[in-house]
Image 1 (cartoon, one colour):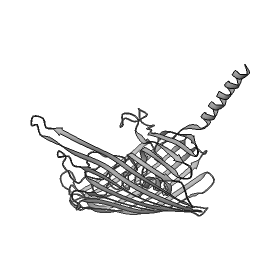
Image 2 (cartoon, helix red, strand yellow; image 1 turned 30 degrees about the vertical axis):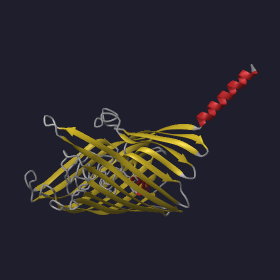
Image 3 (spheres, one colour; image 1 turned 135 degrees about the horizontal axis):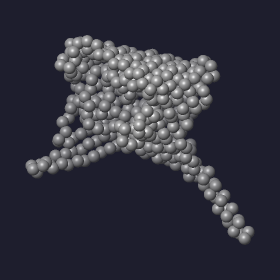
Length: 414
């Protein structure tokens, strides 16, 4: 009887120890509120469908995700012993204002990041899956607006509830995430740490023509790499990252035209480019991106400085390219223990060489504030504005315009 009790106790102790070595966390963000905005696009020398004049649009809605994108995630860590652990993350978009929680657009859960990896204490970690890029991680650590989705931030250009080509769409400055990605990240040594990614998606395809017996096809090679590094010394932090993504299509039945660079985690059909806009997906494009950012905490406030540059070039004809760069400064501070405020201002330019050779300058600024009801719940108010100079577009029109975006809402993290 005593042996049986001892065996049960031993099994229970072993199970408890095993359970203590593994943990899974459920987390998420819910952000809803009122969102308003307006755009004003000035057209001149227009061709068919682009008459002279000013096109205006406004939005007024109870929306979502102004300060931070809504999400639901699961992450876990298992202690494998000897300073080694396994970890995973699975994170998905949430759409609180949609009748289907996961979103009608995706027809199911829309993936933000999903990966699994191994970590060794004192060395670093590696993971495989859909992951954030080095530039996104660097920007997340040094963006004064914390990568919110409102216009006015020229580094992480965004607009909530309104659509515009005037430097107002996320993924303009850099690619946020890539699929089919292997990542490595070092531990911190003397204030320094480094990271790298390699993404690969190769496909060979052969097609037989109906009724002709002819065979067409070729290779699709979506690949890329990225590196990043950062350094921390007391209240000073600096980071830089570079990434190069390539989308090549050699299939005989694909018309190779200048289109656009890769968007967030995507390799798909080409989308036409317009002045002041770098978005969409790519075909036969080399997409090079660079980011640098720094912060210094003065105690009463924290100062930010950022720079981003991106050039997407047609690999079949380097005379066709799109280039966007921007720089921004800002400050963020607690006015009281529960009230936080920030402000930013930046300048940028967009140029291309090719059809109509559009060139545009743009500027933006943003003000925001948080009132924390608790560590997990806050009220917020954000206002941002972006102005783009006149520029030629691919359809022959000359456009310029402005965008204003404002929101008040509540954000809850769990």
